[in-house]
Length: 409
Ligand code: C6P
Image (cartoon, rainbow, N blue to C red):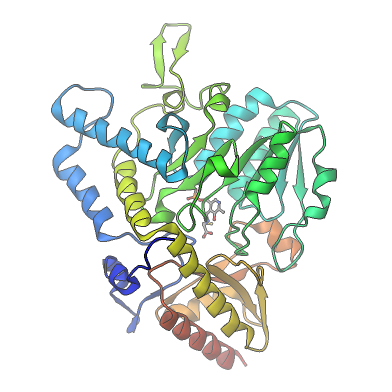
């Protein structure tokens, strides 16, 4: 465990948090949607545009060299962040969504055929459902689901062995559920799948910046995450792919930079990861993300995880003491968020009311519509935390919730 950070000092690194909303100090509890950015990340973006902006891999002038070196250094840094073997296993994408679409479109088109099964779970975000539905329609593959237990949002693994048939070619599952706060046993599931020759993908959108991630220890073939959820800029994310698997996959998009040579009829493609990166990429994004990863690892993701869980448990306990509230997600080992519904109050009304008190929540289906339907609800309200949040903010939030209950009764 790294040294205990000075959380108050860290919070001061985030200029956006120091503001009033509707006359109240902002309480930003929408971190699962996107995190805020520390000054160092904002400065890195400004520095890049003020000093080094040029296209990458194309020029041999000084600025192009600087931009290319910084862009590729960020790739190596991302490999270290995930404990991948090298930067060659890191593909830049716009985020988790594009990373999963890339795997579904390229790996899926090459390796799936009619009768094959794609195994998902019932708690997946739309980003880990829709791309598989699209490729299933094209290839004739079927989709099966590991069931969820109910409001706790945990997976019912008693069905796993019967679901892992010889038709299953891929298992894709979320590491931390964005609407329940469940932490899935990804290493255990990937180990089982690997023994059966099943390729695995982990959606790390909610985990990469919240707990230490080691893709080799997890044993997955793919791992996807978004920069904007881990203190980095929007518009950049990464796909980790085990190199041996990446090399079996055709390109994602065609264009400049992903080629070795082009003729009028035929093209030879680069090796991974460049084969999957056509055209001018987001350059400032990886550069900002590099600084964000340094920032998080200086705090220690083990510390961040502990802090996340403390806040979530504190919030969960306080909300549990209220009447007429339905709480979702596990009681044990909860990630840094709490999803709930107040009796006879729509989740959107909770969020609107909280907004007038300066508290930023999210209400809706959280892009997990099938899960919501399974649980018999349309939406939930959600408070999601990060390391710059405090127990005092949770107290404010709980008072606001009490106020909402009073108002609506
Ligand atoms: N969840 C939320 O919960 P993108 O939009 O590509 O950066 O991330 C998509 C995504 C994929 N998987 C999980 C588990 C996610 O939580 C998300 C994004 C946001 O508020 C937006 S719905």
